[in-house]
Length: 113
Length: 112
Image (cartoon, rainbow over all chains, first blue to last red; front, side):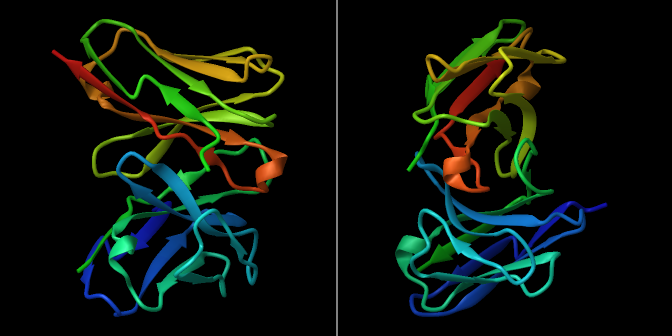
């Protein structure tokens, strides 16, 4: 039982390049989330999904797109990377509704040069 | 924007001492959760306290919740070096949809 798996773990991009971060969970969770974590800022929600085929914007969605074609996968895309998107990205999932904990992956460390 | 704000931002103690971290939030909540993050790792869920609960225990962890003051505290008793980590509170509210809103965290350093 792997839980939440994020790939890749590290990546360096040049400004303007695109890439996709993959999150996979094997717990049959309905809800999935993408956060970014910057020094002194805590975790900020980028996008989230409440089920297969659904997505919604979080607090800082600009410059990112997401897709949830399969229940177990949640993809985060950067179409044209900018240095301001240098961050650590975390994916999380939870079963459904309230009063449930979130389960986190170990993050993707992304540097945009 | 952050809902929860932890205090202090950083805390350094000796092994065996107790560590207390506080969290304040702004709006009504369904529950409040505490998470730990070790360096270079993802967040790990520690404990969840519902809005109708006042205190909850889990091993060496004790969490209190005061909804009238919109605040919570996390107490770690008899701290160990392995407790060195960042600790985050997160609020769960209908106003935020399904997403938890995290504070900026308290960095705890436990020295032996």
